Length: 291
Length: 333
Image (cartoon, rainbow over all chains, first blue to last red):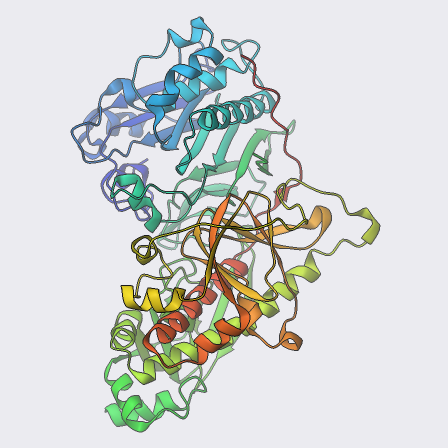
């Protein structure tokens, strides 16, 4: 969160691979298996700039977690943006099977929003408090589970994501929404992790001078990961160690260390599925998304 | 000082034969560097900002894989260069380079080189063309190497796999579609073109659209993606892999400009998204690469930049993709 060369807190104001700062707030969920109710994560959210947040710093110094999902929210510099705690990722409905954070935008989401109600049961859509497309997509993912408020496995999470992506593709087609919409997701229940690098209609931009039109300057929204024995400062730079069994995984929109040699760029249109094996080692699979 | 530097620069094959006045001009843009044994001059993955000429000593390039294993790629000594793709494509360093001995030389920054290119100086154009030509040959070799690595041991075991789910081999009919010059000017390939250059380049060329999954023939034409995305695929059956996804302003089918007996392998190109493409027939592409009109010079520069980008993408270690992906179930409503 703080110490790495390109830590998440630094990415709020000084991201390496983005031109915009991420000033829409920071959220963090941290699972500690030795804490009471280990399936329930520590949660902290702020809509402020995280580097000025003493409470976050204090938590960072104290909390030790087995798994953590954190997100700095990028918003367009426009008064139309809604910045507030309700819109800070990661989202986790009370008692829900997993949490979710996203980097991306579903273009013209306002036209799709109420179509999605057909796919989200009332017990889930009443949980939606904010205005982001991400929270709706989160509810849509949970709706694909037979029991959204019970624990589920990694394969169920992965299947829920694919089903939700297919629904969004169908709704986009119904509304003739054909503009590029990246949707890089991270889902976790503290034991397993799913991440996607995916874009609907990659390469199709509006021709109107808007923020979305400007995205043609950039390439496919990035996702990097590194797997090893532990992420530490080695010789002045933070990097993954490879001197033991793989038990650590980092997934991020940009590498967290100056030395990026052990970071792997996830290919476009892929899903990463990480689980712990019977012997406690980490099993990481990268699968193509055939949508 | 510049005369000495010009002599050093002229020793390298990429710069050999340039007029002395051009070499002196290039030399004036360089800065000296020196390194003790063990010093790292640049790290893998960091932005590539300059080319290094080696005047003395020896440098070693090392590639670290995501697994943490490291291997030496080669060394460079007096008269040789490292980091030449950075001049064209920028991007990320493909390997780390360190000094094996006390070493020294000159550095030519991309920024300085770009300035010369913007001024359409002959030396910059000649060097860009030479780097691009070498990169094109390396791209063909890299595709050949990847094709060999992704050839199934049993040719009868080919099965479709989800890494290239849209790779239907059947060609589809292509349709005409219009795209404005203003739109093109904002894409990567055409960013240095003015509107007259774009108009001259487009003259006689077709802009076409095709659906997702269409297979694009690249033996006889270069295709510049204007909207959507095309993927370059290597290998067959369950071992087929995507080595590059080309979005707007990027090209596919670079190897078509080579003589056919110099093409080591023709990768398959399949649209990953429905796309609009500018078709540049092989003969026209070759004529543009050799041409002297302003639009031809711009085309050559953009082409060689894109070749360098394609090479960087192809040389990046491929992620270990698992060849299975659950098919989404029918959306419940």
